[in-house]
Image 1 (cartoon, rainbow, N blue to C red):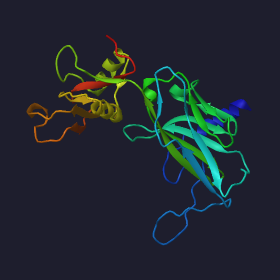
Image 2 (cartoon, rainbow, N blue to C red):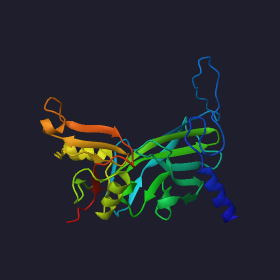
Image 3 (tube, rainbow, N blue to C red):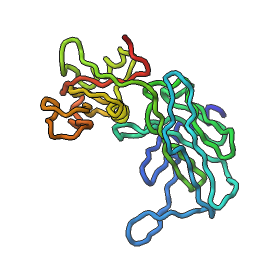
Image 4 (cartoon, rainbow, N blue to C red):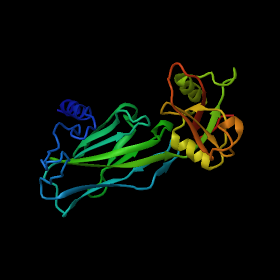
Length: 265
């Protein structure tokens, strides 16, 4: 029975987040209002609302963190069936979301790197929070909490930010010698990961100024400038993050921007 349940949960997690498909093998119902737009219908007479933190949740590497998620009904009513919950992680490059955890009632299954680290917290009434233990650098990012009650399906997003430092990396052989995959490797060798845009932006806002372009986790190449100057995009551009946009991950070569909670000497 337990094996059958786990297989069922695995199948539930395999769905995408297409607007008309929620990963639990039923569709949103469309009402024809003659203009092709989706119109919400509440099949149980109440509206399902999912609430997460509007502010980022901060954590440290190797710590434990809880991403809050609660749901309610308008008007208030009791659920008439077991609630289904799905947590997923949004990717920086906007590709398919990464499955983190799915649950039916009190039983849940975690996936991939989150297996053994992700747990469903249901301490309070209508709570569907995600507890992540032994937080890793790559856990930084946005997470979707999705709650399903029959034909009702609503979700909301909460952001996990790790506290740490962004540092530029240039290989000993000289400037611009790393493709994307090599940049990932050298950051890992430093006990770090490729920085996200948000991490680079926060470092820039705290004073980071670096003229050499480097890879970020989403496959783009960018660099932070506080003091505009001729070799760094020109003196007439405003301070900010200069971007080369997405680059070929095998052919193009740049430096890297790494993120770590502790900088190795």
